[in-house]
Amino acid sequence: MGIVTIFLKEDSGIKPGTVHAETWGNCGVSWVNYRATGFRNAALSTGFNLFAPAIAYGWYVGVYDNAGYHEEPWYNGNYTGGSSWSGYRTLVNMALGYSWATVNSGSWAMLNNGEICVAGSPTANTTIY
Image (spheres, rainbow, N blue to C red):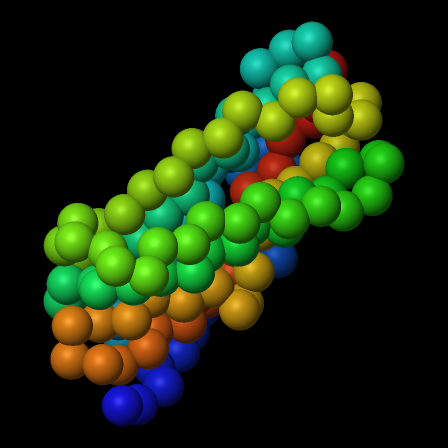
């Protein structure tokens, strides 16, 4: 079993108004969507598209706002969904102002050949209102 890191192809700096961000690498792509929906709420979706089927994953998105940091975790130790996965959450009672979400570098997917793919940390941002 090898460790395969998804490396960034482009600049990884946070760009204002980035609602969708993705990071490509030798296993596939990891991505995150993050947008304010009003009334101090936000929509968060994330996932991966791999070049081979996954059998398990642990996915963690860090969310930062003016109140601090929290983590949104997803885990499935017996995944049968193939090479793509996505998750969605509605975040409520967010702090007003600038906020960003990043797929944490500890996020992973195990391929059906035993290889571990590690996310490349795409980051998207929004303004909570």
